[in-house]
Length: 410
Image 1 (spheres, rainbow, N blue to C red):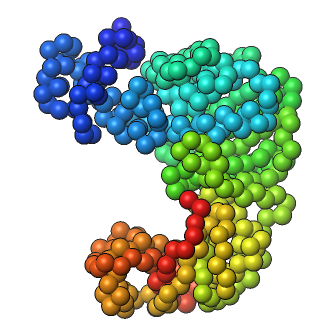
Image 2 (image 1 turned 90 degrees about the vertical axis):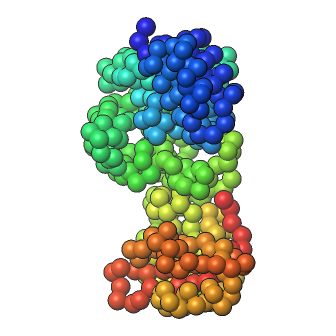
Image 3 (image 1 turned 90 degrees about the horizontal axis):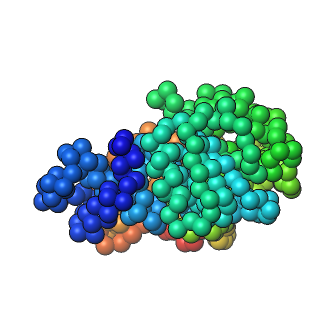
């Protein structure tokens, strides 16, 4: 048997379960590895040890990580269980009578696993190893029919209700955000989109958060920027025969169960740019920071305008108001002190106020939060947030704000 088929065998799965149950930490112990080498070949023992490490790394992303199989590359690229659950619920919302979903470029089955809990599914991938792994992962606790096919997604004749596709953005070793550089290419994606309302009830396309889709697509789809674990993880373009919000974009955050915690939606036709939002030029008492999904979806100006916020600095996505409010999609800070961006002055302020627990945020300067922390060396019993706002296109110096976080939607 090939290695990946052996990994999905009862013998290998039982050995992995035993190793995971008897070992703590991020890697398998040398003693347990020696035991494995007595039972299996060196290569098989190393495969079990590798799966142990990958399962440990996947715990925060998959509730059933201890039973799943991974490859190094597929774990980096796969959809988290929570996001996959959210996307599955979207399909049910847009097309309640969908029975079968095909997941093209399924990888190790992150999306396929969630889809299989509600639909009969077919996973398609060119890589036979990840197809075998996807079959195993999607079959865990699934009562639906799970099929995987090793095939080129551009050649497959589809008999399905809905297609989810995750085009490869790293097929040449580089990460692409241009939809013209992904595989399968834009011709295949357009062919799928053209089938919506005819042979397909819908298509959902997973994209990088920074991807820019063709203008023609906007009038046929709704775009979602999905935030999880405090970062915007992916963009999703949903084309559905019964879509009631074509030409709209939505930024949202989900919890670990895939449940939406907050969302903000705007029509593409009504999007504002930064020049259409008032510029205060200074900070009032409260500072607002939009969440990553708001920023990724280029919704910050529209979001700020609807909440009557003003820019503090031109083009820098920090906003201000005289009033504190809990706003979905943003964090509110009370400004305690405004300082010029001078590390010595900031350091003296931190020492004077005994600030050691320091959250650092910045825009428009080259230094990273890690570099700033290393230079400032905060020590003390109190906590605060340091927010640095600069604009590399402006002659005005950056400004530092010492602030207290009031309310936020995570």
